[in-house]
Image (cartoon, rainbow, N blue to C red; front, side):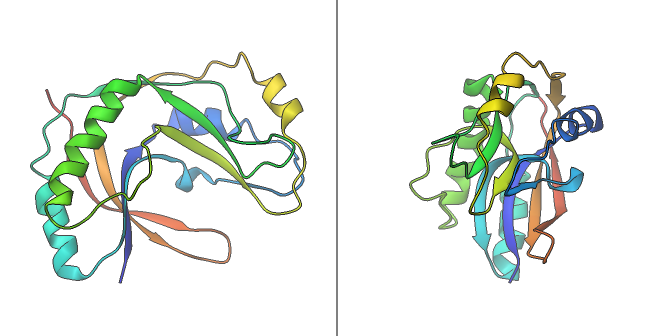
Amino acid sequence: MPRLFIGLELPETTVQALLRLREAIPGARWQTASQLHLTLFFVGQVDAPTRTAIVQTLSQVRRPPIHVQLRPPECPGDPDQPRHLWLPAEPVQPLSRLHTAIAEPLAALGLTSGSRHFFPHVTIARFSRPAGSVRAFLTAHAGRSLPAFTANRFALFSSTPTPAGSRYDVVARFALAG
């Protein structure tokens, strides 16, 4: 059964700017260009009929495009023992409204995102143990400004684990039009 999630694809200019942030940090597994995205809702593993119902449900979501700005990198938790590096996305309210517009109809299919609080961000690195500190990285990039972009659509992705990290493939795209 495929593992699915819903997210925003990033434009190539944003992807390239994020790839330029890579540095040699012990334990860092930097996301590849094809892995960079902003997750809106994690679905999990579903069967083919549920996948079809998800696509049909998502085609009914109506939200306007969103002008997205990525903030400087952050490390949730202890920067001396990092687990992730990410860039928060703003504005939070329109992204949260899109998340809700997706989550509510999916709940009618019995799909929930669990108890996770929605926090829009783009993960750029994950860390294995032991990992090096990211304090210097965070300081160096504290004022960094990345190009803003307009999200005109969202996508349903499948996630396939591989030895090199998960491979993400777009299953379907859905327009944002207001």
